[in-house]
Length: 369
Image (cartoon, rainbow, N blue to C red; front, side, top):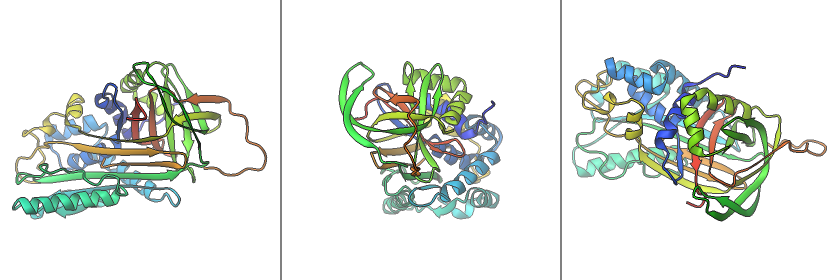
């Protein structure tokens, strides 16, 4: 059976290996990065436009439509779960923003437009505070300071932002008990482990996986146990993104019950994505030679692409942010057909269940880091 390969899944598979830090946890949202860069692509021209579309994995208008549909789908998720994907554009000279670009980002992506005041140091700090407050509000307070002092300067022309927030209780609360976790170097540590039942099963040469559903079923956490290492899985996905799409389709397809064990987790991550994006081929857009005249007249290039992400997992549910069910049945539950215990480095993906779309992903080397 052929599995549909979305631009988000393709970009996720390609970006992850470039982000991974040996021995360290990585929690990020390729989706959020893709949406922010789509805001740039909608106003790019020439080679810059072609480069952005090639790296992001689809035509800019298709990327915008996909992001808008996903944002609408996430916004429809209701209590007790909630999910939001928002976009915003802040510009130094609002009058210089091209009308067609404003219309596209407002109508196609639902992005808000804000003004930057960069007249002096105090004004710059007020603008930075305003952007950080906007991000914090749209990430449930989990990303309070996306822009640190010094990131905005009098030379700043434009800031393009995408913010994501997901929170959901498990369909059935998990049981907590200490257990062993083997680090990459073979050292065993004792960590709080969560035990419950997964739904759905995937197995291939590189990994086994299952999904942990949340109340309402709209969101799931896909958990991936590598056969060898997280690096090997990420390399396989980068070489063939359809392998990730197939894993998500199997794990999120329900059916098989899985006896599941995984660490409780509270982790955060942040980085400038410019280097990894250059590895993927995004060079002109990140240089003074960029052609972004569909946004503003005159020369402009992207100087940095900053992302922060946080992920919390406990016995009650999960919460994830980036700036980037049990239905009780009469009778006894069926006996689990499989077992998946994440007691060594593993991968996870917070997903929109129906769309098989990864929202935030993680590579966990040490649950206590």
